[in-house]
Every structure is written in structure tokens, then in C-alpha cells.
Picture (cartoon, helix red, strand yellow):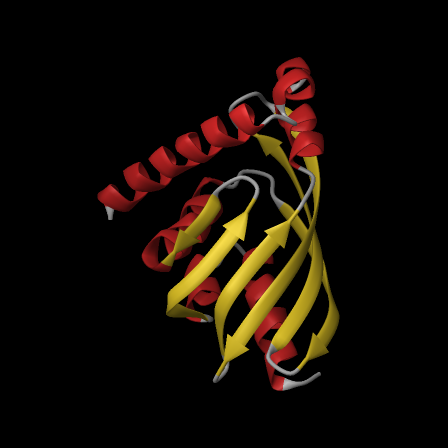
Length: 155
């Protein structure tokens, strides 16, 4: 395992242990994170996302594997199984991640997953009917942004 792969291994191991501070210690201060649920977020907001997710996790199970590495890029696959707190519905989300690292720190982190599939699991019928739409994505980004803002203001 090379140095960059070790960073990603440590990042996900910390996630399995709900250790957000270790996770975010692998990010640069100017980190750029993007996924279908939060959209693109940067810096402290990206770090607070992991802090919020770890703090609120009830029954989260994370499995992961490093799938590739070349130069400053590392790819990984991870699965998250949990109960979505807003609806009490079980979710199994399958995510492909791409990382860019510089000097042993993550500068860019992109998670890719099927938002429509996630929304069906998390929200049921409304996710089935709306989860594919740009309207749903916009509303979800607004909602997750407000959650992050609220979480950040408590710190």
C-alpha cells in the first residue's frame, strides 16, 4: 500500500469508528467535497459534514476497499448501511469515491452514487416519484445545506 492509499485506508477506518476528527485531519483546510446529497461543499463545511454524520449515526455500518491508485489520485468503493433517521427506513448506499491528494492530505474528494436509488430507499414512494428530478436534487441540497449551517453554528 502506498502513502496515498494509506491515507484513504485511515480515512475510512476512522469512519467505521465514527471518529470524525481523525477523518477530517486527512483533509486540507481548502478541501473540496462533492456528492449527490450535499452538492459541492468546501473547507470547514466539508469537515463539518463528517462531524455531523458521525455524531448523528445510530446504526451505521461502513465497508470499503481501495480500488485504484495512480499518482496523486486514489479511488475507493464504499458501502453504507443505516437507518435514515427522518423516515426510519433502511438504506444501503453503494458509493464510488475519487480522491486527489497533495503532500499526504486530501485536497479533493468526490463521492458518486445513484441518488434516485438512494431516495427510493430513504423516502419510499416520494423518492421513487421525485428522486430522479433536478427539483429533488435542488431541494435536497438546500435541506442538507441548512442542516450543515445549523450544525456549524452550534460549534
